[in-house]
Image (cartoon, rainbow, N blue to C red; front, side):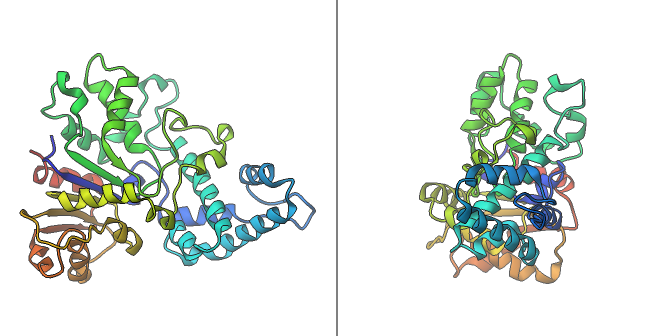
Length: 347
């Protein structure tokens, strides 16, 4: 069982362990899928047909809008690799709703495809397992679930996760999908419906939304069966997310009240840090201990990084005294980090 008020901040690097694309791989896929060659007529001779058909079916009776949409695709194709992420590119063009719309279509396509071929998907012939359990042993999610279940008796299964928060910046549903099946595996007699409700009851926040409720859009749904525009209804751009007062308040409350702040695969991008910032004005009655991965970073930036982190949950006047309570493991992936640091944030 985790200590009360342990908050997990989950970034793209944490989902990479399940086989989800991150960074340049995701940008390159979105860039390439945004190229359509119409030199041969009204239908492209080159391009992603799933994405084209989704847009064509939506706007086939509005040629003016169709032209604007494919100009937006051209903007994404030529410019997305100048941004750190598709979210940043959308935010850069916050005054153009078509960029946001098409960006969401691209996100929906890329993440749906990735879920369906992720390391969580069971082997052929073993679909009843729900999860490829052997694969997950090399990721952070297996020890996370064991720690979550530890000390919780079967009669109290409904209380799982009620003392923690998970702030997941990823669009995928890997955490929810895994936990549903893991709860069933760990506790005899728990039906899928009950396990799903337990997971729904946990404080899992997706600041940018997700592909949708698993009960409506199944994890691993094949692209050919997916309505991309339906999926985009569940996605939120950064500009939209800062207007979601209830969600943002929930994020800030979790950060401010945190006793342990555990960050995995998180890149500390400015827009994400702004979303996490609780803007606390008075000193807390207790310290927050921070444990974080720092893969790809170096100790050369540690002072500035710790300053950014402490600003999330401490007033500026007291922030520096928190620096010694921040542990960053550089050049370490989430699985190793979690196993080595686990005892620091379990009860």
